[in-house]
Amino acid sequence: MDYKKTGAEKSTITRDVIDIAEKTGNIYHSLSVISKRSKQINRELKDELVGKLEEFSTNNEQLEEVFENTEQIAVSKYYEQLPKSHSIAFKELMEDEIFIKSRDVESSDSENKDA
Image (tube, rainbow, N blue to C red; front, side, top):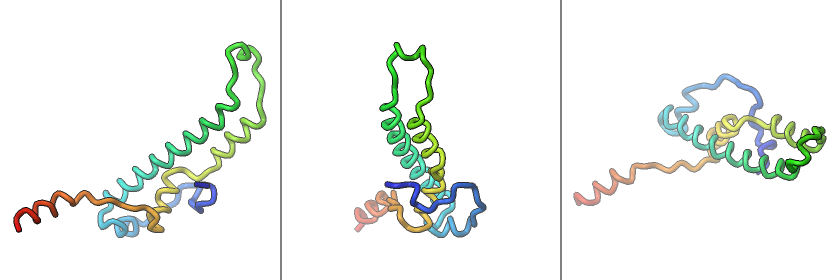
């Protein structure tokens, strides 16, 4: 996924708590969903960045010579300019792009056993 084109804010802005709570019916559940999705996005970005930076890794013999690799710097700057993972997760929640699983299965199972 191209996270640069998500349209998420790159800086911190004030959010309306009521809007966040309306998405799941509970502010704490909404924040939990944002947190979990943010961790997923962060893991994806980190894996992608590490994969790209492995191309620039050097052998131990070359560590004596320190040199700047402009391509490596460009890759690092690209990832630094991306919106933060929590901003992307928040935008996805507000636009209903996140599928939220409910753990209320136990209560419905107990109701079926009584019938």
